[in-house]
Amino acid sequence: MVRYKVVETSTVTDESLEGILNEWSDKGWQFDTIHFALREGSRRPAMAFVFFTRNNAESQPS
Image 1 (cartoon, one colour):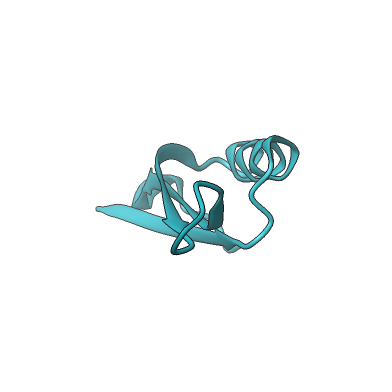
Image 2 (cartoon, one colour):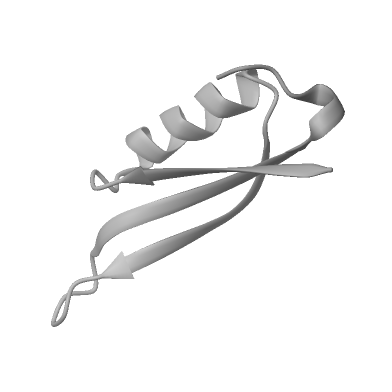
């Protein structure tokens, strides 16, 4: 069974996203996708949602 993890951040910088990717990858999660929420009238994302997956057999409490 596949398990999902969603990490939400309102600090959308390369450093913050890199930190999220490294942190959860180190915990055994596989990066799946990233979605950005945009502000009206701005090209800069207001938020990002980073999605990870892993098999239930690999699950550990987190």
